[in-house]
Image (cartoon, rainbow, N blue to C red; front, top):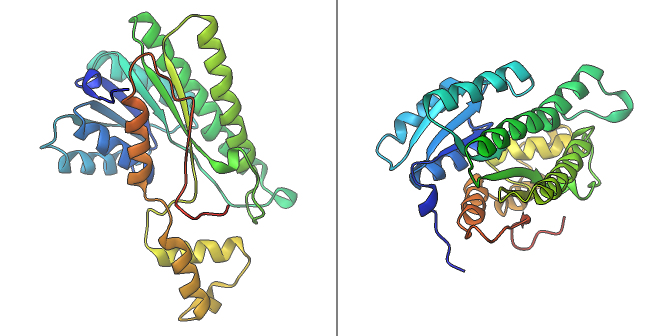
Length: 270
């Protein structure tokens, strides 16, 4: 199997949640590979800053301000893309939120917001992308960036409705694959499961882990426990690792579909 990104050069790719973390890393890699990339996010000004730093690369990055919880925003974004840049060939559904509450006393509006972004927004973006691909006879590729909690509920606090939305992404990807098969479409769908990843300083992740484990933040300062947490997070995946995975699945020949790709750091026991 020969891996190559050549057929995507100059084509349009959309990455949701592209202002930071995994979304930003994927957008960057695709620009470096020569694609025209559109990053969707509420903080579009951050994507614009990223675009300036990538101005010397083979491709180009555009920013479109989009709230993935609002259908009108998503529809307007896709309309702008096709009008100004051309038809979409790749969609990376990365945008997701996690409010870190508990189900037994959770907030209804928070639940709705999480489902709207993680599930409904993903479905709307996917629908619009496939509609464009079919209208333009494009054998495109859809990638859902998922999580291992979309397969297994971990024994942690504050997972709330987040796991349910990620299980939904797993089901949505497989449902879409079967639908595309029934249509005899060559549009690919891949779901990428990621394990714990770190995109900020370890101290911030230690505090987040402390919250999950119900440990007061103040008890971590300059303690052995803080050092243990830092050691645990040293092996966490970087956003660039997930970006590499996305490029890998996109690099496969047209007749090869990677249905699911799970990325974990070596030695992880989750």
